[in-house]
Structures are given as structure tokens and as C-alpha cells.
Length: 219
Image 1 (spheres, helix red, strand yellow):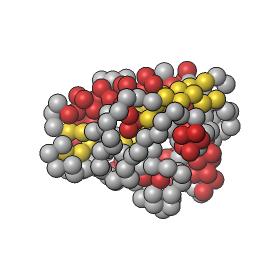
Image 2 (image 1 turned 90 degrees about the vertical axis):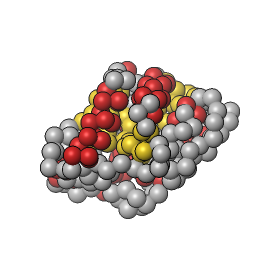
Image 3 (image 1 turned 60 degrees about the vertical axis):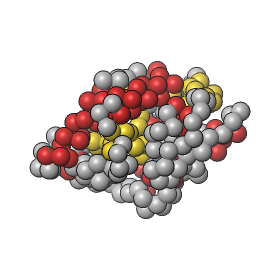
């Protein structure tokens, strides 16, 4: 299924906080699902994200990353653990794989650069209600404005949001990249150097982008 290079987002811009919800318990499953609190995207998506972060910073905001590349095995585990019904509309079907599995999707929000605090959004992350939808307009004016800010900066760099999750963006051209099922710890083993990320909002150390080649796997 070809190859893809996954870039460690902590290396692209050390001022981008990583709050990887699936590496700790603050996600809709209520338990850690990743073996490390790290975030990866394929090279063009990672560079586009860095540009979006720079644009946001020019207006006093920053991007906070919740999730990016997701191993296929985690997508399957989430699907299997989610009962049929409304919640399944928010979980990718492992038969098709997801854009996260291809390193072409990112979940994120905004924070203020002057305080480091996350901004108000219409819903919480992974909140499976209509409040998470992009067309939900019953939120506060501030939350709606913040959602629009995030969408504007992301779309300007080639990302597109999905209708029912304000935090989720897919990178254009995702079809060109294979589904991957490699654990974060295995990516580290293929690297020449490792990076450190934070489970909270502390910034990572400064450095150059690092890439790892991973063989794509079909589900």
C-alpha cells in the first residue's frame, strides 16, 4: 500500500501545545488509548498546519492539538467499543479506515497566546451532540467567532472541516496516502532521534522536523 512519512508535530513548531487526549483519560472512552502523548501528520499536512499556526499567532492565538495520526488498530477499538446508534456517527468505520489513519486529519482548538488558556468553543472536544456541529448557532457569540477563526485559518492552508465536529479537519489530497497501523512507540524505534511532548499545554523544545517512513497497512 505504499509508504508515508510521518512528521512529529513537536518538531515543526515548538510553540504548538500538544494535549493528546487519547494518550490520557480525557476522551470519550475515559481511558488512555495511545502508548505515548505524541502527534504526527504526513509532511504536506504538517507543514500546512505550521503555517496555520503562524497565521493564528499573528492575531494573538495559537493552535492546541488534541489528536492527529491515529493507528488503525485504535480506530477499530473505538468502533468496537461504541454501541450502534447516534454515537457511531462520530466514529470512523474501520472497514474504510479514517483520515486520521492516513496522517491527514487533525483535531484541535485555539488558545490565547497571552494567557495560554483555551478559548470558548460551542462544545467540548469529543462531545457528541448537536453543539459540536459547525452549523450550530445557539452558542455564545464569542464561541461562534472562535469556531470561525479556527476554520478560517485551517481552510486557508488546505484543510477542510467536517459537519458534525468543529475540531476535526481533513487535509486535501488525503486519498493519496495509505492507511497506517503503526504504534507511536514503533515510529520512535524507526527514528534517529526522539522528541518530547507535553500532556498539557506546555510547549515542546525547539528543533527541526523529523520524519519516519512507515509501511502502509490495509485493514
